[in-house]
Amino acid sequence: MTDLAERADALLDLHTAPEILVLPNVWDVVSARVVSAVPGVRALATASHSIAATFGYPDGENIPLELHLDMVRRIVEAVDLPVSMDFEAGYGDPGATAAKAIAVGAVGGNLEDAMRPLDDAVAAVRAVLDAGRSAGIDFVLNARTDAVLRAEQGADRAAVLDEAIRRGRAFLEAGAPVVFVPGLVDRDEIRRVAAALGERRLTVISPPGVALPARELESLGVARVSTGPFTQRVALTALQDAAADVVGGGVLPPGTRALN
Image (tube, rainbow, N blue to C red):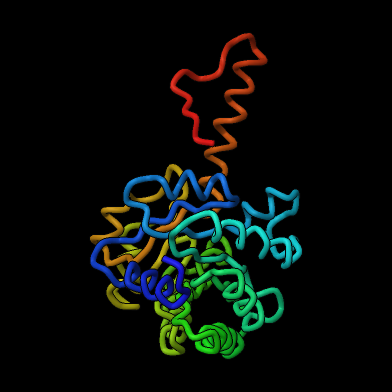
């Protein structure tokens, strides 16, 4: 699959299909190759937090954009699947950043609203989609609202969900195909937001220990579930545990596979 438009169309189809799209996020070439080799993986998404950490930067647009884009380009060139880039809040110019992401081969992306005024957040969504049209593709924007993630402790939960829904509907009306609401893990809250946004319009993240299984999310109407930085943390946990075993006098885990 080499044509950008074809990859974008394939990625969009995966979001609207009856079966939930499950995306274990990747952060470099070897993680992309390992994940893409898993049966059933049909697309890849990068994790900005993980890419930044790979180069020693904290999350939050601290990694230089060109370095970030170079890693995405390497991932795109290493696999034969559609790739979505997490470009955070757009590095100050969401439309231009989306155009640069498309130039390195990404056909979808995450854009955080960072709880900017809604008019500004909607304008950013439109700018990203315009960049896709200018490039001749239907860019698959996973428009993220941080309404739940940034809610103050003790805030009225119904009001928090109402704000997420208000922002999500505005992003959908602006043309985004799906809305990402990190922080949603409760079954009833997911059901409420999914119903308010519409079937296969909501995407969520899957934190270890608290997330619902993908099949249950699918039954609630969720379009997509990703893993963000947590897949890298799984890998790093295994690495640190293995190192501790070796340093402590043991050996590396039996059954370790040659995946690189």
